[in-house]
Length: 275
View (cartoon, rainbow, N blue to C red):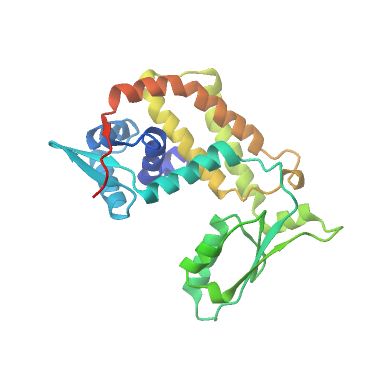
């Protein structure tokens, strides 16, 4: 499945909101969103359904202006988008400044708690952890999982430590045994193959905004799945650096045309304080 085929409307919507609404204290007209998403091949009904679901999940709020409905951010969506912004533009894909610290998380759950075990493992994977042993997971750096564990109701069953590897331990081998490096490397390589041709080409003006939204959505999906392992313990040909250079180069190339398109297509109004 290609990145283009597998992008969910909500993922694209969050990118759109982060790109056009975040930090501007505005709301965007639903018809503008429908127009942009139609250019991405997403039908009006699917776009309206995505907007409604996001309101229901407290990721959007409605604001009526005359006969038009506008959508703005909530505290929850702003936090999600700020986190994505940090991952893309500040944290980055390559961990060059690791100080040797690991976060170790041990858990012991009753055998019958299969759902809780699955939920915990899923959240740990999302947070950059890998399974060192069955009930002992590890992540590079200092990772605060207190809110995650509390939300799952598992605080009494989880122990968290900071640690350093003993002298002589083969960290590179441990990383290979704990994380699926080939899968992650394949994602970076596929990203480069898909987007590198645009470093020497320009899209039609009408396509630039949607292409930039797809570019950012695909890139964020990859870096969110990346545990940011220390680059000095990864294979010499690790492709994250090249992929990040491609992302930034193509993003810069698309941006002037994308800005022109958004100014032409998008109807925005100032966000009113919520009651």
